[in-house]
Amino acid sequence: MKYICASHGQMASGIKNTIEMILGKQENVYAINAYVEGRDFGEELRNLIDSFDAHEQVIVFTDVFSGSINQVVSGQMKKYNMKVITGINLPLVMEIVMRQAPLEDSEITDILEQSKEQMIFVNSLL
Image (cartoon, rainbow, N blue to C red):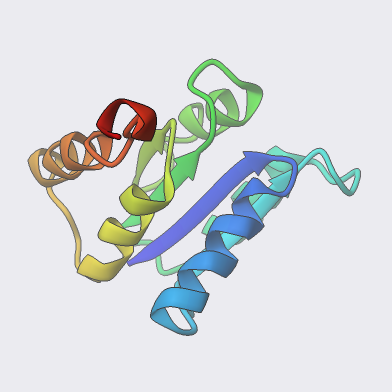
C-alpha cells in the first residue's frame, strides 16, 4: 500500500507530518505540494507512482473535488492502480493509513462516512 497526499500549497506536507507525529514514521505515505516550487504537478505525480510496484494499490488523497489537483489525479485513474479520495481531513487519512492493507471500495465508503462524523460544530455542543 502506498498513500499520496496531494494538495494546493503545503496542506499535503502538513497532513503527512501530523500523521507521522501521531503514528510514527510512515515510509509508505508521500506528500506532493502543488504550485509551490514551480514543478509540474502531473509529472511529479506520474514519476512518484511509476516508482511504485505496478501491482501495489495506491490511494491518493486530494484537497478539493473541483480543483486542478483532483482533475489531474482523476485523469490518471485508468492508467494506474489507484483509488482517489477528495475533500480530505486528518481523521480520514489516519484511519486509512492505519489499516495498512488494500481496501475494497465499500470499506473506503464506510471510512468516509465515519470521518464525516469527526466534523463537529463545537459551539452547538456547549
